[in-house]
Length: 103
Image 1: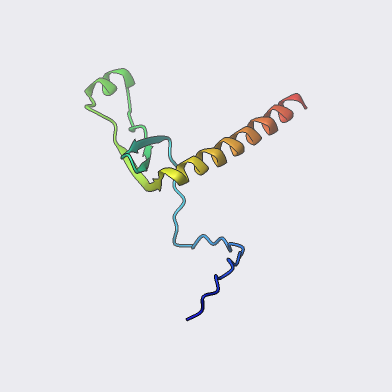
Image 2 (image 1 turned 90 degrees about the vertical axis):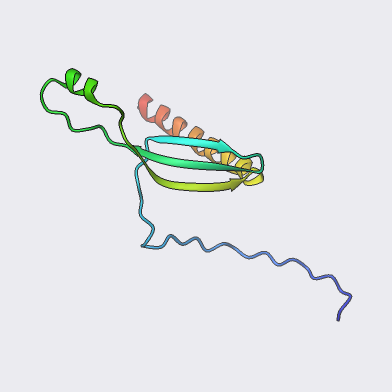
C-alpha cells in the first residue's frame, strides 16, 4: 500500500439529456424545506374547458387539478448553487430583453 497522497484529477463533464427525458411545461412550483434538503415539485395547471357562461360553470367547480410533472430533491448546499445559477441566468435574460425593447 502506498503512503503517497493521490492528486485530484479534474475532468470536464459531458452533459447528456436522454431522448427518454420528457420536457414538460410547468406554471406552478412548490418548494418544501425538510431541514437537510429541498423538495421542489413542478406542476402544470390546465384551465378546464368551459362552454357557455364561464362564470356559472366556474362556480360549479370544487377545484382545478394541478398535475405534478417533476419532483426534484436538492441538498441544501446544492440549492445555494442552484439559486445563484438561476439568478445569473434570469438577470441575463432581463438585460437581453431590455436591450431588445430599446431597439
